Length: 65
Image 1 (tube, helix red, strand yellow):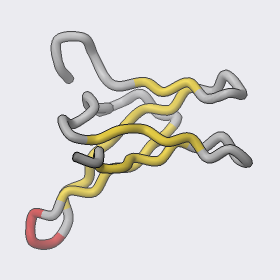
Image 2: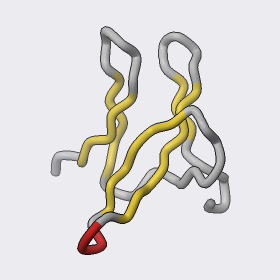
Image 3: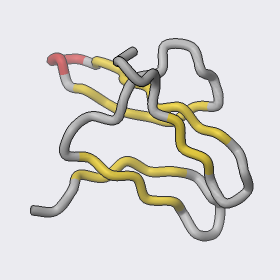
Image 4: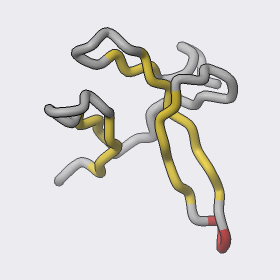
């Protein structure tokens, strides 16, 4: 957790999702959203959030340069 706390995304339905990180095989980092606040992380640099217009679920996407 950083200086400002974990990254929280509130969708159009007013539900809060917290960003989490999983380190898999070969030290590859995978990011996912959960409603659980425990062990949430900050938004990594170079990434942005996109909300699915039908379901309201957030998705992490690399920023285009």
